[in-house]
Image (tube, rainbow, N blue to C red; front, side, top):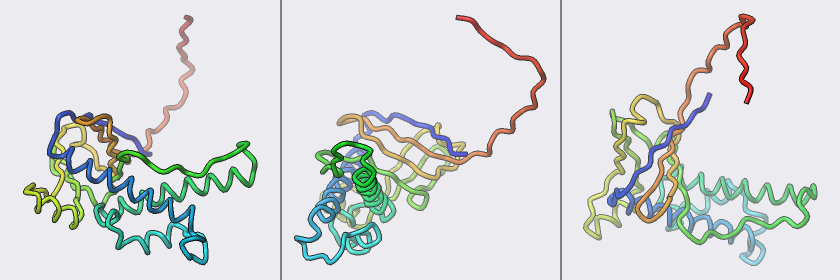
Length: 196
């Protein structure tokens, strides 16, 4: 069974700057992929670019390389799901006039998958891509990893960590983890009801 826990981080300027760069790269990658899907014939592609084709071809894209590999693949997967939904709605007529996925205009929420996460007590360490590390080194910021300090995640094994941007100095980290299902107790014949 999958559950989630969240923690709000405020005024964490060092991490926020890195995460905003990643959110920016995610939305730019979304727009590159979306442009290809919308205009594949004009771009000289023989067939519609699916997720497998895009993740293979866009590996050299600047914005793809600014993200951890699994995070970039997740952005393209979300785009693919949006287009599949659009085609299904067109086919079934579930919505009168469905619109294809839109272009993003601001930083996009990002997801770190298991390989990009390491937990050490109260510290959750997130991976930064080589290209982004080099960029931060050039501007004088020593950023090798993102460190999130919170006791909320210390007793769970995180499978996925979603970063959601709230405003310029606040983001929410949502940790998704797996737990054993709770066994149901047998009915003992006693029930409680409340009248309002």
